[in-house]
Length: 77
Image: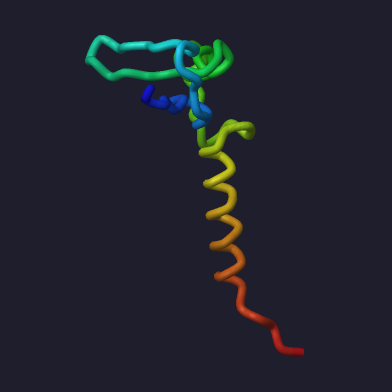
């Protein structure tokens, strides 16, 4: 069975035989599903939490919505 990899930037699964592996000088390994993800993380130094089309952004947004919903008490008229 072939191991499924997950993109280091957007969080999607990478099909076996596709994608790009990038290894930094300190030994950190990044896996990217597309050139778009590679450019955003390595060249443009963007953070996945702030890029709207990534899974990390969707997760962070859902957490912040849940916190806002809990923080607002009900107002009685």
